[in-house]
Amino acid sequence: MSECIFCQIVAGRIAAKKVGETTHVYAFRDNNPQAPTHVLLIPREHVADSAADLGPQHAVMLTELFGLAAKIARDERLELGWRLVTNVGPEAGQSVYHLHFHLLGGRSLRWPPG
Ligand code: AMP
Image (cartoon, rainbow, N blue to C red):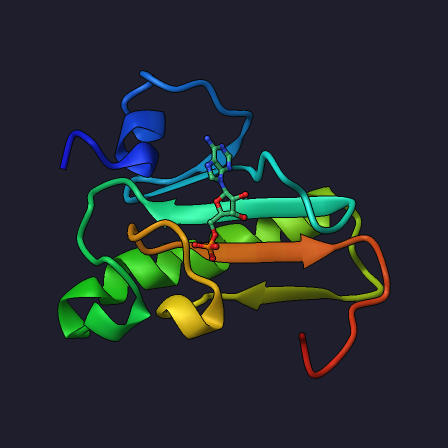
């Protein structure tokens, strides 16, 4: 999957602003931010194109990912609230097919999203 843009970010071949990492997860700032904090959390390995491909074998990675999201939210002082969301498929707006979660915060977030 060397053509995958997120795989290239993890490999350091495309620059990104890293904000955190664990054994299985890498977090960096979205380059088209939709909120004052907009961080993407991804598995280092291209284990899934989207959340539709997740299974029990991804439990350790997902536990790390949710823990890192909460740590970043604390670091960014998002005590008033934050959102962790993943888009699956074109109608949901997915544009990169390497599993990722958006961590959004720092402004009032509407519900339901557009
Ligand atoms: P989605 O549309 O849910 O698939 O989210 C993909 C996200 O990746 C979008 O919010 C893009 O702005 C973001 N993105 C794409 N390329 C890069 C990049 N090179 N560095 C940082 N974020 C990126």
